[in-house]
Length: 453
Image: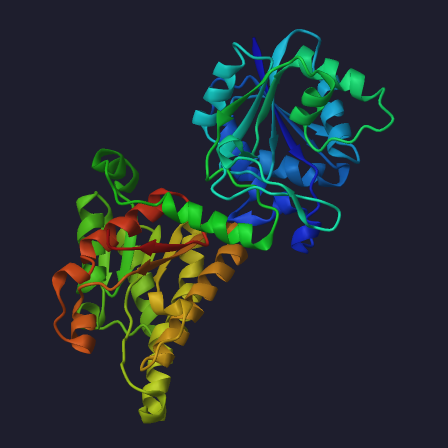
């Protein structure tokens, strides 16, 4: 039996107020649809992928396809004005030979092999299969006045996802009846089968909480967090060594704390690492000439630069009204202006290598805290700088990410807060592992949280 995966990509992003169709909005440095197609194209059981979309989006999608490495045939089909018409266009393209067809929203980028395998297994015994998850919320029915008129038992309620899967002949038969109904009005393909082929059982298989549909602006934030959750400490050093062998790394602020932990780990993994700091190389990250010098030196010594890690920073605890103007300027220069200078000057080296730049922020970036307002503001700026540069440099294949560790046992923190219970602090080596795994994950524009268990 052929397994044909149909990706419905006709959205225009109206609910998000976007200027481009929502499937082309970027998360982790790539358009949403690219993540979706990459995940599907790596599933060996899929024989063909059909993408159904508005004609105005076809050229952009073709450019995206050129970036995807797969042996699975992919075909773009012009969609219709409605989801129903787009589905029919896809079905008309498929030959009459029986097949399993799986229809999926382009804006559900976290589709995975486990879900697809469960769908295909269920299709061995059922003609139609839906993907859904258990509802943690009580479901209520309402009337035209938004008053409750029914409260189904939650145990039997599910929240629908995609893919929705069918035997080709079954779905075609359902639409054959639907087209004869002048009052035809169904929101999805399982609904068509449910209404027009009532004798066909529709099996529901377990989906995934991660398999979200990105339709609102807040969904983009959830998607970012899902990518972050997929970034975990290194568990397979053998794979890591294959990735980092001979990788050329410059760590700014590598003499102690997180920086030193990064130097030690990357060196252990086989990378060629240069550590720079005031004490080691007299490198001043606020001085463009000093940064240019260390970048040029590292480039010559290493034969290029694949990764620049900036861990250097300053933490000053003081109420704003008690800070001198020089103290304020110094803090902003080190924690915000320096990252911008490093990024600008590292750009040509990273463009040459299609490399990566990693910054560090603080959990205080989400909400300014008393006694270190300037530090919090600067770290929030680093987050915005990361996100902006990841988009500006995407076409140059430069990735930009930011690590956000919880309180970490470093000399800088000890100097600011004194000795604290060790069980309340992260080990710098764990932060270094997350930094390495972020590089391994091939993501960009992410703020990667590192937390105590």
